[in-house]
Image (cartoon, rainbow, N blue to C red):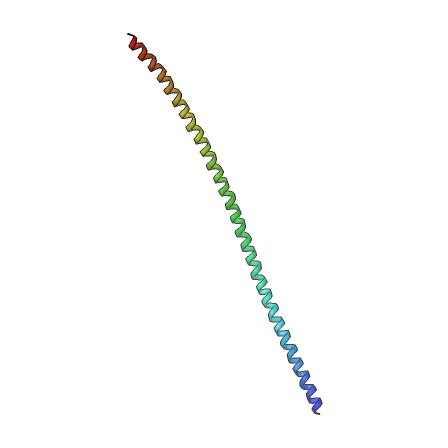
Length: 106
């Protein structure tokens, strides 16, 4: 009887242990699924953020290119202006010097 009672207690302990382990496994599986959903949502959010930042990089590079192009064009315009002004001043200088020589001769 004692052996039988002990076997019944052992079987009951194993059943309780089995039920606890099943419950524990189910709880862990639910936690993993919940964690997986959170991670998948985070992945989607991060990918959207990356796409947004990639678009911003492209936009900023386009702005940089436009600014560089404007600066080059402005530099060329200013350079041409200076060249024309230098040319005009040289022209004036030659004519004024000719005029001065002519006035001094008289």
